[in-house]
Amino acid sequence: MTLHIEPHRILDPEHGPLIAVKLNILTGKRSAGFETDLDSRVFGNDGQIIKGLYAAGEAAGFGGGGVHGYRSLEGRFWAGGLFSGRNAGRAAAKAAG
Image 1 (cartoon, one colour):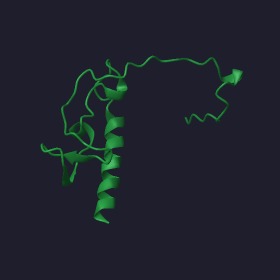
Image 2 (spheres, rainbow, N blue to C red):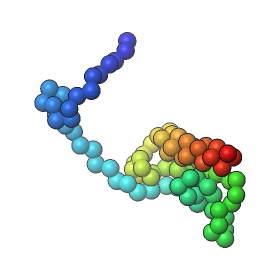
Image 3 (cartoon, rainbow, N blue to C red):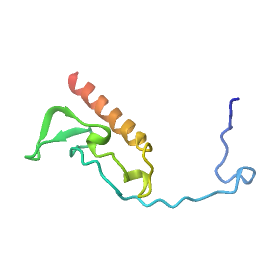
């Protein structure tokens, strides 16, 4: 069975009612991880970028909490891992030429 939903106006009364979800954006736990810039490049202890070293997922501190809220469940961190992994891959490919 395939579910197909056509796009519609957000305030279309035929597709209502709207719902809201309250998020608490803060870290409930942290997997530590390396300090990175927006290109997932890793900073060393001296505060300088370590050439050729990138971090993604939990290695970049995308463990629990964060964008998923303080009551997030294990296994829900894939979005941060995908996001940071994509950034790291693109930055590494750009650096490689």
